[in-house]
Length: 459
Ligand code: LMR
Image (cartoon, rainbow, N blue to C red; front, side, top):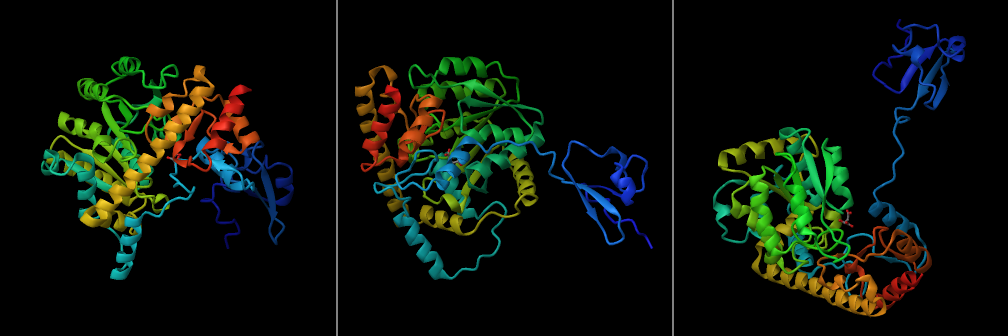
């Protein structure tokens, strides 16, 4: 009988030794155990397990080598916020829209669609890997505009994804197969997860100049100069609208200059559009995507429906890949589908069915657009009030930029120390970069937010 434990496939089990040898540290055991008994890693935490025959198995955890690293600041502070038992706490950390009463809205159109969908009693079977055709068509129409020439050119593949993050991830995985070792350039600053996501996919991530603290807007000349020197084949991540975290967007002129520049330099644009409808409107916010479509170049787009449908936890998004021609589209689509199949297999049913129904039913669609406009306008009115009030109190700090910034976020210019005091002394949670979620400010809490910012700025 083979008395040796069948443990070769368990990497954490580093040695099974007779008790005396094990206690002596396993030096003379040769290959009796699992092949590496004499190379016991003394830095790893190990534990000794004795079996009924008195033999010792020295175990060290599979996980001992994992380096401690904090969660990204958004999720770390979001967790801290959730753990805070104060009733006065205010979450300006995470990008979630709350209504005039501070509630995450259940949109009318979404509720009606959910009711209808449930009434239909449809089974929740697997969805196609790429999502249903009506869903994909609706996403493309939203991005490119109904009737856009690209919609009939058959060079665009759309796949339903696990939120906008999932779209970025699948896109990154596709690109990692095609362009391994490429550089990915993200704006400085960018959404915290962009860097993590592309690094995890194996890319070297660099920052391109973007935000100007002096103007509260974009330093396009610096951005342009940097991008034009990137090696061919580099991937450039762009926020199509409502830049996260600054709220500062490129002007239409800058976009018109950028699209041909990237094509000329052989750079691959990857547009992230997580806030379509929160800037100037559904069509206006998609203008950069449409510009790239007209330019004829190949590019990627990650869409999210988390914010625009207030369906955060349903994880509905889409990856769209625009190829040079139908043959290339078929190739890249099949690669993306293979990657998805081996990753999470199929996308979610419920949230996507709701988004699909709202986007394709004229009555629900019109209602959703109204609700989206209400959300956009409410944020805008809070921007104006905050900016005016703070600007008046601290004209030297450039708070009036909050008014011109778009979408859910603003870079307030608060220092990390000020943001910490905001949290610790006023229970207003903001990122230490000074990013606040303006979409969580309302008429009930705006005075508190403004007074708290005022107090920490005064020092
Ligand atoms: C944010 O930036 O706060 C949102 O996009 C939520 C997230 O996942 O980080």
